[in-house]
Amino acid sequence: MITQRGLRAEDRPLIAALLESVPAFTDDERAVALELVDVTLGQPSTDGYGYRFVLSFQGAPGGDGAPRLLGYLCYGRTPMTQSTYDLYWIATSPDFSRSGVARGLVATMESEIAREGGGLVRVETGSREGHGAAVRFYDAVQFTRAAVLADFYAPGDDLMIYTKRVAPARASAAPSAGEAPARGEAPARSDTPPGEPALYDAAFGYRDYAAERDFLLACARRFGGRPVQRVLSWACGPARHLEAFAELGVGCAGADGSAAMIAFAERAAGARGAGACIRFSCAELDERPDVAPVDLSFVPLSAIHQLATPAALERHLRLAASLLLPGGVHVIEATHPADLTPSGVNRTEWTELRGEQSIDARFRIHIERSTPDRVVPVTLEVVCSARRNGGAPRELSSIRQEATWYVPDLAGWRRVAERVPELSLVATLGDFNVDVPFEHAAAWRLILVLKRL
Image 1 (tube, rainbow, N blue to C red):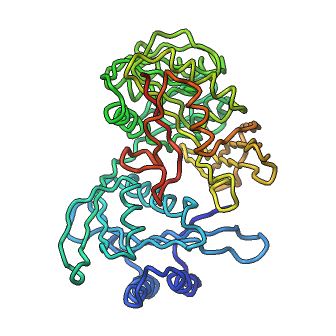
Image 2 (cartoon, rainbow, N blue to C red):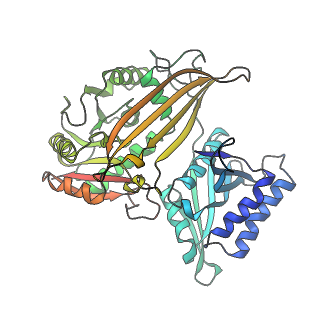
Image 3 (tube, helix red, strand yellow):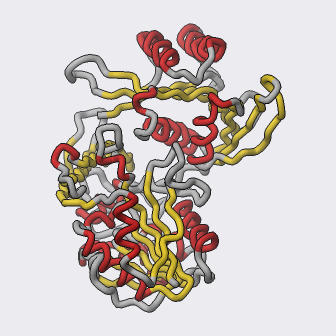
């Protein structure tokens, strides 16, 4: 279990040890990092402009042994600015260099900034060889390289300035079983339990659907051969991606194997004014949905792994090819193959707060039960709880989904794609960024882009 919290006095030796374990840092850099810790512990800020820390631990209070510090982040408001923040320091244990720890820390920082009204985040790093991983990381998490000052630190060691704009948080509420309130409405009553589709929707509310829409459009521009006027989302779930496309006036179709999810998605899209732009069809990933041909189709959220054999994957790709117009692209967001190994990200926990409701989710890939053919059980648990007047949380509703996944490695994906001659595998990416290939050191997903010939 991975947890996050702020800085405490007993954390100083843990941070010092962590910094010592990172070979990219110089002694001077470690000294500066610890100075920020000492300033924060010795003189806590009262004006909102001090240093803020987010620490990530493995293990929870009450467990066996002491929690292990996996990484930490230090940021703060930039003096004499209205809404700019500096990311001063981020460090993760080398043992967890590709486990999502750094991403989780940045996500928490961005959530806090969004809650405060949003703003610009600035980070500075050097160009010397030891900082290469940091440069790749900032590129991967969609920071923009804003400036380079040549030879700033030393001859050949440039100052690189990255920035990222964080939008203000938007009010949202956990939808009840029969409704999907629009953004900005009052939170649902804390004693109204959400149904399964609504609970699933709330659990994945952290996704930036507009940014992922823009990534899919970028895939079509970079790797496809036609403008995008109609899109199809396979395993569309609550159809949040399609709502984002509808905002741009793109014609949308959504397919999902759950009739209850389709009904929820139709109500939700209608409540937010996107219902007229989306046509839904009840169909599994290996069934042909009743939709017209499209320019772009996609399978989000690792749903593709529900197809538990190479033959089922091949059927899906053949169906996708039949619904794509020439030059169209099919994008699959898949799990990184390394997540079937002990060093991969095979356990994830997160919490969404919606008014007085807390949505706690746990996802696990049971790698200890995986087969040589890369078939593995997975579980998703989501619990909605309510807390009033500081009392103990009370569970309102929950879901537990068990499934068997097939998670090919890249060679396995290539073999399946080669059996569908109507499609060409034109790109394998490692993030929601067309400039981050799967081989990138910061890759955390496997995103496949196939073009209809």
